[in-house]
Length: 376
Image (cartoon, rainbow, N blue to C red; front, side):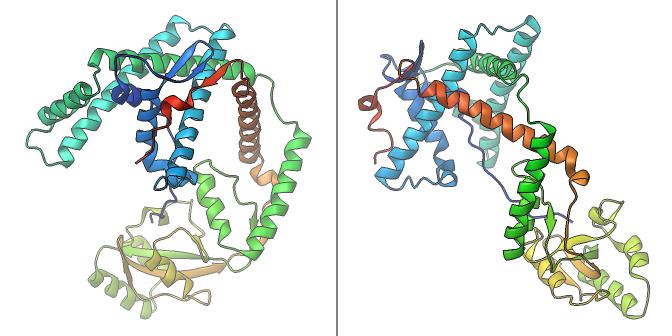
């Protein structure tokens, strides 16, 4: 059974694509400098353009001049932060071994190959009879219109890969020995549990938001199960005729699990992972048809009529009521500690970067040069 996924959009600065769109424009006009590193207006413009589709996810309304300017400034700050990391890594004397340089070269090559493939995908989606030939045309036009070349693009992608390796290596140095103590980790559990109990009790659907986001590493896992949840198992089949046959057999008294074993096509019902059934409640991350039919089952043992969704035909049985409970620290300690340590280190690193960026002796912006970016 496939769950609906909550997609969290992560902003990627796409410096390599900025190189493709930024190109060599003759006279260099600066948007900012970071130490001895330069951020050109064209780089900022390219990053802004590439990131427009992400703006709303970060709370920016680029349909207004004010919102567009705010998002442009956000993108510039992102570019400044990235360049500051490179500058500080080099200032700290971070260098790469030959093995690391070779790995960066492989990454740069892969990024270039992926860029080429993106043009092939675009050509294919356009219905080109010869996608590869059309992709070359599209990429050539992009390179020419931005006054850059394949060799320059490859060089920039290699430089980006090297810089990312330098940043990563410097980050490891900065975070060496930075960790929460056992007592601090236990306190984090207690604090998070209290917060979740209050939230999930007032809005049980938030449990499933946490569950979904935590599966992608974007939030802590649920530590408290509120009242009102229950578990279901299902028999998923491909067509209505089969579903009706299964339902008739169930109505005649045949065993649900035996029929599930015979007819079911949902891999989620196989094995031990969901042996107790899917946990459901308002807000659970299942397709609407399945969830509505499951929530309509009021008593343990109730079985739904066949219901259709994009995945096929579902026959759902309510198997048990899930007790409200706290999830013990011991049961989640490894995963929770890993998450909390990562969050702590991320914040520690972020604070370092913020301090660097706030140093006006290292960062200079030239707002008059980029004021037109984002204006209609």
